[in-house]
Image 1 (cartoon, rainbow, N blue to C red):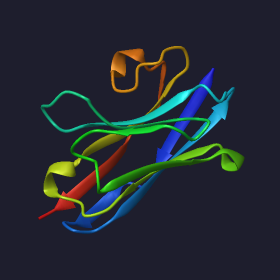
Image 2: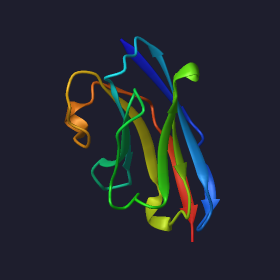
Image 3: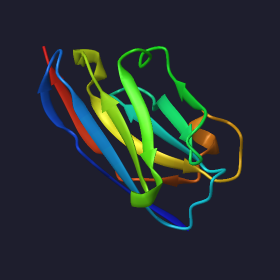
Image 4: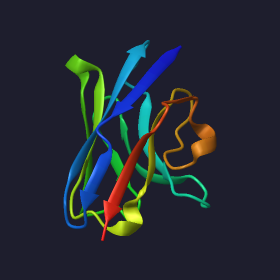
Length: 124
């Protein structure tokens, strides 16, 4: 079992930054893939970024490349999503997820555990 708790969401103006955190408890292993997804109202959940718990490699959605950075601190059992140059279209609930048994990076269907989500609102 893996428990995930996100934090760090909030309201920010366009062009601003936020850092989301996801604390994992329970059993974690180097082969786990930790992902960030987001879901805006009326839209499907979409992949944002992912990292293997061993720290490499890292993958990003095209919408996140150059603006978002995923990282992890194994000592704190925490995965981060640093979001810079935020845009109004980044507004969504952001979810942390763990993929414990598959090599798929971007498919939400392959992730076994999910956090409760944290709201990010970007005002234009």
